[in-house]
Amino acid sequence: MLKLNMVGRGASHSKEKETLDIPDYYHNQSQSKVLCNHLPDLATSDNSSRSSIVRSDDIKPNQANPAICWLLRILCAVMFAGHGWMCWNEQMPLHALLQNEPLMAGIVKKIFIMDWKDWLALKVSDNIDTAIRVQAWLFFFFATASLAPARNWLLRFIFLLGTANLVFLAWLKYFDSGAGVGHFLEHSSQFCLPLIVYLMVFGKGWRFPVRLIAGIAIALTFVGHGLFAIDLPSETLWLNHPRPGNFTEMTMLCLGIENENTAGVILLAAGILDIVAAILLFTTGKLRVASLGYMAIWGLLTALARPWSYFDPAFATETMNRWLPEALYRVPHFGLPLCLLLALPRRRTKV
Image 1 (cartoon, rainbow, N blue to C red):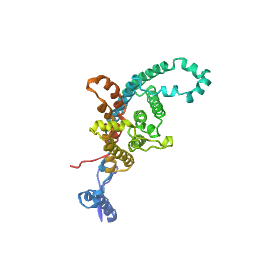
Image 2 (image 1 turned 180 degrees about the vertical axis):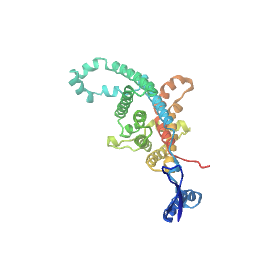
Image 3 (image 1 turned 30 degrees about the vertical axis):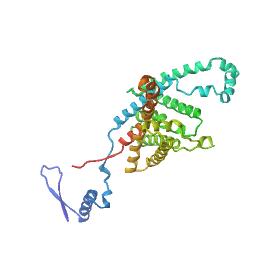
Image 4 (image 1 turned 60 degrees about the vertical axis):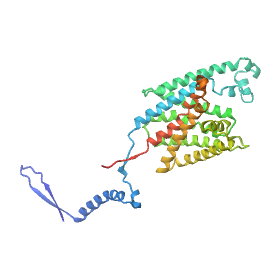
C-alpha cells in the first residue's frame, strides 16, 4: 500500500496530518505511465527497427512562419516585377487574343456594333500596345504592394486582383501557344503565389490549406514542364505537348553539347524526374524532402537557363533586358519548394 500524507485544513490553527491509503494498483499505473513515456527514448537509442519510433513532442513545430511569410512576399514582389518588365518590353500575347478574327469578330460586332475591318481601322494594334504598358505599371504596383506591411481591405483586393490577373496571363500564353494544357499548368505556381500570400497574411499563417495549395501549385508546374520535356505530341489539342525547340537549344548552350540527340535524352530524363518529383511531393519523410530539394534546385537552374544561355557580352544590356525578366517571374518555381522545405517539422535536439 502507498501512504500519502495530507495536511488537514480546519478552523483551528493546529495542523493535523491525515494519512490516505491508495491501492497499489494506482501506484503501479502511475509507474507504468512513467515507463511508457520513456519507451521511445529507449527505442531510439536502439539500433534495431524500433529506432523509427518517435515521440510526438520530439517533432518541433516550425517557428519560422513570419520569416516564411516575408520570403513569400519577396518572391511575389520579384515575380510581379518580372511580369511588369516583360509587359514593358511588350512581351504579352494580348495581340493574339484581340486580333484573332475567328474569336473576336462576333464579339466586336455585338458589343461595338462594327465590322472587323472597321475594328482594325481604329489602330487596334497601337491601343493594345498602350494597354500592355498599362498592364506593366499595374504589375509594378502589385510588386510594391506585396511588400506592404499593412493588412487592410485594399491589400486584400490587390492580392486577389493580382491572382486573377496572372490567371488571365497564363491563359493568354496557353491560347497563343496552341499547345496542350500543360502550358497553362506550368504557370500554376505563379498565379497561386499571390493567393498563398493572401491566405498567410489574412488567414492563420502557414496552415495545412496553405501548404496544400502551395504543394498542388508547384506539382502542377513540374508536371506541365515535364510533359514538354518528355516530348509528347498528340493530334488532340489539349494533349499536345511537343518539346519546344528552345528547350533543346538552351540545354545545348548551357551544357556545351553539340548533339541534339544527347540534349533530347537529358531532357527526357529531366521530364521523367519532374513528374516523379511531383508525385513524391505528396508522400512523407525522406522522399518528400528529396522531392522538394530536387524541385528547388532544378527550378532555380531552369529559371536561370534563359539569361545564362542567351547572354551576349557584346550586347549585355539588350540581352539582359530581354532575358532577365524571364528569370525573375519564374522565382516561384524554386521559391515555393524552398518554403515548403523550410516549413517541414524539425526534431528537437536532445542534450
